[in-house]
Image (cartoon, rainbow over all chains, first blue to last red):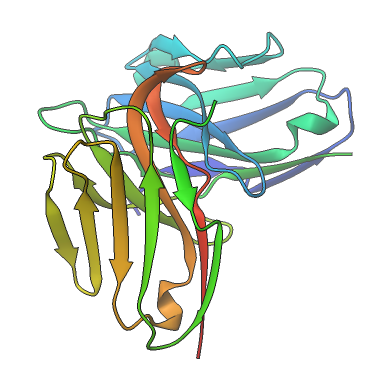
Length: 115
Length: 113
């Protein structure tokens, strides 16, 4: 399977705990995106990387959130001191920068529940 | 601020019926994309429309980009249960999230046999 892979699929945690999610993009894709989606909403942009550089970060992203993409391959998204409002589906997408309109390929997401 | 407004929010129809869903904005977009998302999965790209007035067909799905490039529609002919899902339109724009691919809230479609 050469699609975008996200782990874990589900995460249940207690308020105040830290959590980390992993995303493995399609191998030849140099751009990687993180989105968050809550029930009844479309995906909300969080941040994106081109290779290992974090180029854009949503102003909605609090300082409890941090993302990394070491060596421009997989990426991790960490949430520190989780809050109940962090409960959502966290989606990762990748694309290959080229000519024309960019096409994003999404993973199946990590569903986070903060109790 | 929601740049892309989608309507209706929910739609429940019977197999064989036709339907149209809409994506509207006060902003001009250089392109718009339509995605379909099934429960527990990520969105999957269906089509990208680039030219004002453009019409693209994907089997029973017809996508249209408005002449002014501010709106788009998706028409499904003879809907089938397999069409059930969340239909999202998306476009690149500046918002309080920065410059990125921003999505509407989607239209949740249920097609019953």
